[in-house]
Length: 250
Length: 229
Ligand SMILES: Nc1ncnc2c1ncn2[C@@H]1O[C@H](COP(=O)(O)OP(=O)(O)O)[C@@H](O)[C@H]1O
Ligand SMILES: [Mg+2]
Image 1 (cartoon, each protein chain N blue to C red):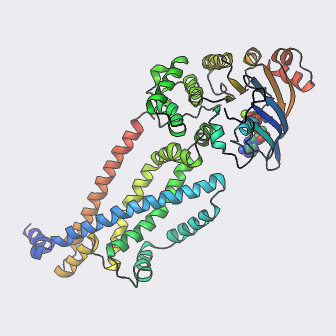
Image 2 (image 1 turned 30 degrees about the vertical axis):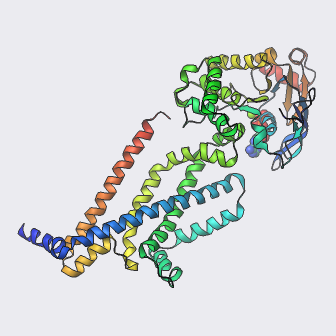
Image 3 (image 1 turned 30 degrees about the horizontal axis):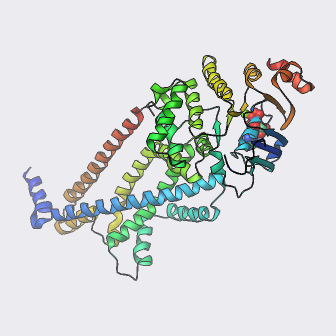
């Protein structure tokens, strides 16, 4: 963590975030604070801007307006070295996006070795430790195409963890999985949450959100319409919009 | 049969005429080899610049220069390019013809390689880019470690084909009086007044080279396909 960051400040502070794709406003002014150890879930109908919000946090999408402070540094400032900050923000994609031309071990160690000056031994020891935790130590020398979807996604999570991130961003991590593989991925995420990893999770798994989140955001048409602690959020939704949404998905 | 042996003797053995063939073959292979290397280097550079522009909108000026290069090279015959390189660009300097041919064919090949590389880069899923960038790799690092190895594998057959084309195209080197394989056969023809033997001989040598090369490429492709990744 960098020296600008003061304990008790939000880890990520989002102010009036706007993202337009041409005429379309995917995000129309989003503000929220994410604190260390927060497990924030983002739910909402398809096309409401959930992915765009998440992808703006590590600038995979370039925000059109607003400000994002990460550990006290304005990462929307074009002068900040975003590559440096991305190392601290792990990201897990719906489609896994493992590197198909590398073994699992290489997938996990290339980042730490090329970006954090870790020796091969150091990087592999750490990768092995994490692989064991997700029960995939025996697949270290396999290639991604030899794994099931659930295994791929667990590896993708480990790949992000190998960089020792301060926050993990998940964009519908179980949406591309066969139903019987969803559980194994959720269980890894549950463990992370219990270890107080800061997480921002976009998902349609409402039961999981209710169980693991400490805050749930409801997005519609590029805005945060309602946010609350999970129990309140799911049991006493305030806005019609959220009531309507929950009645469809629960 | 005796006719054949006589003709063979006349065209290849007498006065050590086979040396036109072996000398020419050496020139053809030298020119092809270095032109291929030059084509790959140039093609990679131009292909990466073009796809960087396609993906990010950056490198606008370099991309425009590359477009001019591609348009000119692909819009004019290679013989004309060879002649211009020799008589116009290097017209007033004393320079080895092999070097001239390498430059002309290398620059020509680079344009075709560039478009092959570009299509290879564009064929790699954008999620690969995003995964690389999200770990913290720069654009360049993502390109080198993640995109190019996959792109290269995808376009290997097209690249191999381009080099077969190049090998055959060097046969116009005789236009600048470079004694390559084709020119060697033609010199024999002009000495012996026998067209069949030297020209068919030359054709067979080209054919053999192409077949051997194609065979190795097939083996390589099969290995790439069979390896699980
Ligand atoms: N790269 C893009 N170009 C144009 N429009 C986009 C792009 N990405 C997302 N959008 C649009 O922005 C809106 C929000 O998309 P997204 O954030 O993916 O929604 P969600 O993840 O909630 O389904 C949608 O209308 C979508 O079509
Ligand atoms: Mg989405």
